[in-house]
Image (cartoon, rainbow, N blue to C red; front, side, top):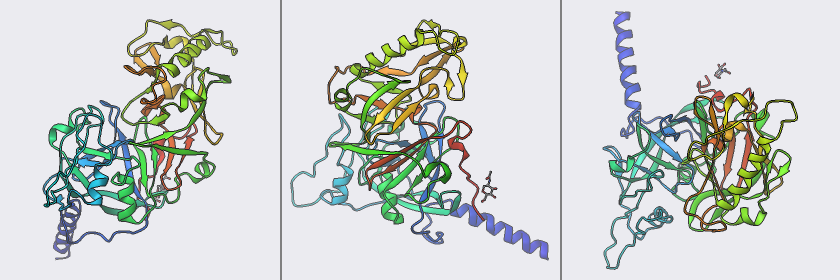
Length: 422
Ligand SMILES: *[C@@H]1O[C@H](CO)[C@@H](O)[C@H](O)[C@H]1NC(C)=O
């Protein structure tokens, strides 16, 4: 009898557990833990080098640090909204039309149409018309050290046709924009969960890393409490996050790029690109300085790096046997960016050397195509995934500042403890 009771109990627990995974259930939702930040594990997709977070029903969303919206291939269970075209929400949804995509207008006429938005694919640049729907992100709250309890975060997403998923990781159902706009994920979590409009990213090079929306205690306080900050810059017409770089150094030598050149177009952060893209007037001096530094005899008696035939799109490639290794990756000169506020952001070989084939590693700075030197419509530099990985990045849209901390070599982003605290 007792055994039967146990079985019945176990069966109903399983049923309960599987129900709770469905976001469509309106009844029986766990109580929202208001005020606690929201945690999501971040996975790097090996095929695309894009980063994803879990969404619901086993599907994921691609993180786009410069994206203005959350969009998904909406499904049954996502509730269509009745948001008029002229409403403030619709204006927010259309505040940053992607290049080449229509800028919606409500048209004239006394009857207010439904809101239409144009979500865009961050990789292909394609866009499509979609309406807005209410959907649910299933995640955990966090105290900064561990997950605390499951939470259903209600969000507004633009609905996109399945074809907009082209070139995105298998299993993804849309994109979570983390830009500085009103309908980006951090702003939506801030308003529904009553938390700050901030997010922390620790992008993994292996996996899994961590994203925390809403501030709260930072993970690894012994390291993060002394994190340097630099102003987080926004530019009209773009939801992307920029930082202000005053100078670039190769070890202790300043690269001949002026502050004015770096300020022209600014330095943008991207999770869409695996490597940094540099405008010609930044690229040339940096690559020349690099070539020179690597051709010189290292002071420590290590062998001279042996240049080999370049592999496109890279220009500088080396025989890996001639490059030493250290905890920072290949033993190459570190690249430093002096940021507004005075702190330096250093990149080691791990952040800009890429193995292109056995025995060959290249400097993964790529020259922007189709952009003239000094053309301020293009950023001077776009930092990509390789530059942002294994760093704690604290994006604070309220204080308009970015904290950045390189994890020591014995640590990495996958050290976050995803075991729920009892
Ligand atoms: C992770 O957190 C759990 C719950 O607090 C704890 O029991 C466990 O020891 C932690 N693991 C590590 C490796 O710190």
